[in-house]
Image (cartoon, rainbow, N blue to C red; front, side):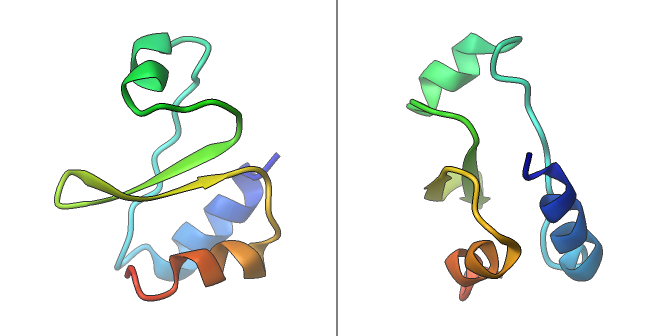
Length: 71
């Protein structure tokens, strides 16, 4: 659902961030490790640590607002 938006954000800001996708159904141990309760969930990492978690589908402008100041 939000994959096209994430691809746009990566195309525009790929020099400052990396987008990686994970199928939570195929990797329940990772879902559990990061406390994911619903999909889609975006975990934003800096220096190997989660600095923000965004839950739910949002339009591009809202995702960019949530990312503001992180990259």
